[in-house]
Length: 290
Image (cartoon, rainbow, N blue to C red; front, side):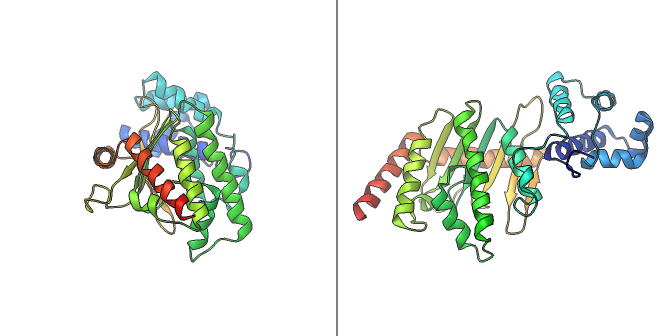
């Protein structure tokens, strides 16, 4: 069992990858158990992240699963070596961070490129504290104030990577009403606009605004986040969220559809420069109103 008595995000991710590789190779858990000379339940626990996968066992499995790409093997070995290591977010516990959110942060933290489409809100990685509090309070299932502040602390940690990791690329497309509408107070709105303009100047951040006309657009099915990693190591993942949980899409046919949607939105949206000009004008009018 990984340290702390429960699977870490890394151990669960490694387990999920091993399950996909085993299924793609057409092997049963019983067959894999015979290969490693262990019990079948142990293989099942490895694939859920409930037990640590030794690197020596991992190498044997990857050989039998036909994984020859050195980059992917190195990535999976790194997950195995780090399987007992908790991410900075995991000590908060399930009361603060639901398992699906912990998985989301883990993917976000390892991603090299994050593409997000938001039709109603400013993306979480770009939200100011005041804006985020406003969004949380608008939820009828409002969180306790102390938990809301913990989630804000976690969000600040997530946002810090944009500033400290030049290798991370963030590309956000936001529907215009999310930018022009006043969330909370006029002061919160102005602060959020100023923050978007500042962060958008970073070389590793692209912010585009999708205009309201025409009303029909490629993103009408709803918001999503697409994580991209070293393509030779791990496939892209699309994250979808609803009121009670989330869904992760990893099948090639699913990913290709969302990639097409994002490209269509990118083409239809204002350029980054024109988007900055639009936000500057919205801010100017907001400041004039006071």
